[in-house]
Length: 125
Image (cartoon, rainbow, N blue to C red):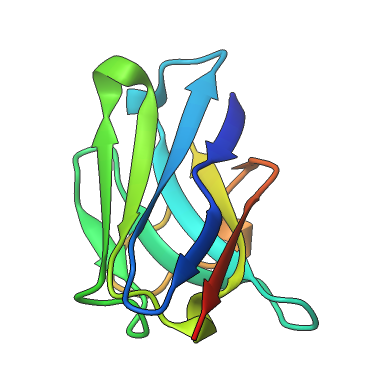
């Protein structure tokens, strides 16, 4: 499956952005999907995940502000980001796996097999 992330841009603190992850090549409903982010000089970190059946998990740093959802008819997964903070600034990646991790813990980079190219989110204070 090929993934294309989009929707990044520049936002002010407190603002909102909606990221999209579009899949091609396979039926996206058969995949678990995660969003990760990476700021320069830092490791890639988990943001949000959604399983095939719709179960979700969020990193503590975004809980209550970000919402992950999927539209299987459009072969897409979304990340609605509200209440943005300067510390949310990073390159955001979507990732997919045919099985995906159990969501009793934060997913790891190695839990996903397919990755998009990333979309930049910059939040100004």
